[in-house]
Length: 408
Image (cartoon, rainbow, N blue to C red):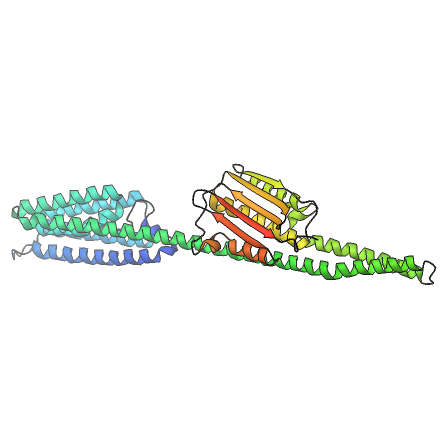
């Protein structure tokens, strides 16, 4: 019943489905182990009758039959139903006791120690397995020496077998660790891909909402505002016109529709912008980061005298959200500063942190830190995004929208 276990935790037989490679290797080792036990047991029975006596060596036969019965029964039971650690150790003790009884009768039974090395290593922990292998090797050497006299072959054979068993067990443990590491990497890649897909969908939705808000603002809203002004001008130009009531009614309808259109534009803006200015939205975003990460100090500075266009405000909020998320996720900062100002360059949004930073020249830096999406979002509105970072010295992200795009 050599269970496919290499280290105490977790047992090899309880490996997750992703460790199919390790399972296959261990299954092949088990087949080889069972075959080796059967061959050496047959050799032992043949050696028990090498003197040609008609009388069978009954104690040796009984010990061999008992060894085979316990070994096979335990193996079949383990494969079909599984057993606990105590049951496995009890099975190992029974197998070793029967082997010892067999060695007393037949010296060739000492060679069964080779598969027993692996059984002990598979069942016991690393250090307990090493101790067990050394003890079994000593027993085999002593048994061969007492039967046939101590010879170099009788000493070197078990010793080399023990070293081979220890080396192979170490290789299997290394394979298992590698399999676990790869499984963890795959799980992280799958999670990252799912997160990126979700973020891309969110970015796509927000981009489309911002685009629609901008289109409605530049077409329908502006048109209704122009219609309202023209009707107001017509009303003032000829207050006594026969259709003055219709003109006033048309102006009121245009005004109501303009109000509804503006509400629609507001609804298409990011949630943090609802009911507040851009600076207030940035404070909301920062407050959410602090609520989720109390150990980080987030400061929001600056402000604007007048509000930028809706699409630029939405882009500013999204860039701030992405920049703060990147700083928290990748930089492990203690302090983040978020600044919004208007100057000769236009609107400037700056996100600085004192985190670990990163190498901006690395080939995958933009993809790893989501900078590509931020750059596209800023560039879509005619702006530029600058990133300054150095390992161990924090990161600064600076988005600039020129004056032509930053005024409503």
